[in-house]
Length: 276
Ligand SMILES: N[C@@H](CCC[C@H](N)C(=O)O)C(=O)O
Image (spheres, rainbow, N blue to C red):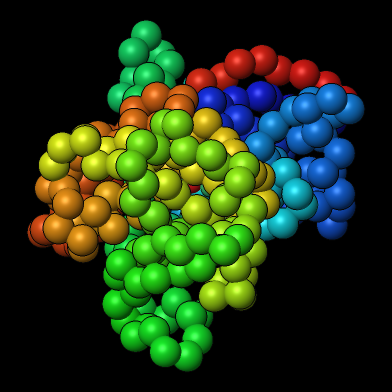
């Protein structure tokens, strides 16, 4: 099987092109191949498939074998892959996702290769988060949550996949390993959650570190950056457009007042090709 290794700000994927559908063993393959010692090593598998609604369809499997509804860094990688490998010759393309519908993607091309990708990530979902009991389902903003004997406050945002955004004093030095796993599997989130730890540096700049559902600490999370910007606006901390700095680099995120959509702009890279 031939694969391409790609990343978006260090959030890395094994990318497959040419399948008609997700293989039935995709989950086991993800666990084996994403292993950084016994496999190829990656945060997830990305399948670029045919679509009857868009130019392409993307499915993403986390390194633990679970499937995610959406992935911001992977969609930028998929867009670069199909353009650079000449499967499409347009700078505006559409990609269907499992949980966030069809997304419009705009490519910045230099010397025949994609350098930057802007994705219309759609509208953030603030309603219907399956959080039971006392919390108001339509507005889970700055609510208390307890994990491992410690108290935090969180804002819940879905970008098609679930995110729990928590503000901390200094995100880059925050102990992800201590709190990430406990919050990922917190009973408030029946489908588990991605957890973002954020520090607002100014109204236009947010530092964020992520503990991803099904993958643990990754260098970047595109949907997590979008969710963090939305949470920061809802809490009154930031403007509607800000740079979100992750361990692997920066994303430009805008929550448009005109159409309520989130626009994410960032790079994608092909690292190598291989056969397994
Ligand atoms: N890294 C991603 C998100 C990947 C999926 C996530 N782990 C989940 O299970 O929801 C991104 O860039 O958005």
